[in-house]
Image 1 (cartoon, rainbow, N blue to C red):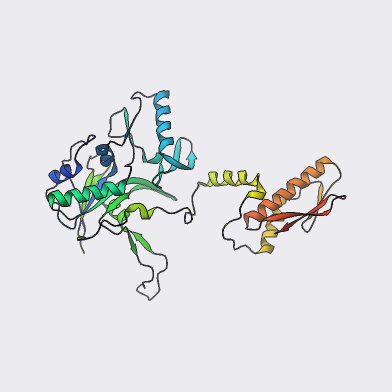
Image 2: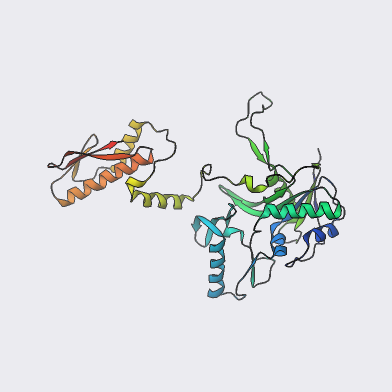
Amino acid sequence: MEVRVLPVLGIPDVEVGDDLVDAIATAAPWIADGDVLVVTSKIVSKAEGNLAAVPAEPGPDRDAAKAEVLAAETARVVAVRGGTRIVATHHGFVMAAAGIDESNVDRDRLVLLPKDPDASARAIRAGLRERYGRDVVVLVSDTMGRPWRNGLTDVALGAAGIDPLRDYRGEQDAYGNELHLTQMSVIDELCGAAELVKGKYDQVPVAVVRGLGITGTPDGPGATVLVRSAETDMFALGTAEARADGLRLAGALDGAAPPADTAVPVDVAIGRAIEAAGDTVGWRRDGLTLVPEIGPAGALRAGMAVHALRCALLADGYPTRWIDLDVQGGAVRVVTG
């Protein structure tokens, strides 16, 4: 198989209401059946009018307007470091600043992500098929960062005419080993390849990946299937945000749920809990029995140690409850329940 990546040159600056199908077909009459058309989301948003008005001049008013737009596009804040906000959009995409872009647009406008990138991809595909007789795949792309790696890459926000994932699960590799986890995001790979000829400053918003020969396919489920559900997202928060969330939950310990799955043996969890409580001066530790010194200060320190024990046990998957052993003597035992 030989795969080629071709830039589509000559697409004019896109304005609200422009016909993208006509602009693409006019600039690239050479598009053929089976091609994969990768369209930058910015021109989709501009054509569809998915823009936000902001003051043109730098200053507090512009900053406040941008913050308001970002808040409206944000479904959930993932991480904040300085002026950078990583958020989940209402589509489910996790991106810096919700994918809002202020480049290659008038100063008094911000470009938002398309409202429904899959629907946009389907509309472009249908237009090229019905009006120009071309049977192509259409991807709507945008740029994202990646956890644990520097650098950005283009990924698919919308897709039509292709299965987004190549699922190898259940197949065998060359050594006869069964594959259990491998699902390749084909549409992201295609968008990354297309970016090599589009670039960021060359004003080439469309590219064609040729050689896969994908024809006669339904629109398919779209890029939406690449968005992880809350149940499968193991990294839903940044580290600092997750730690802060845990500290807040510790303030309402009895209502906090333990981790969904724990592989920590109970004796290990108890050892960790005792270590977490530390050697606080003023109370005596006998197994998990805490006996405070006489007086309010000692009782307070003992209470803090008990809370630390309970938090540590819950973190390892073991909720706890109180059992009064000797109310007169003030001794209390924490028992895993």
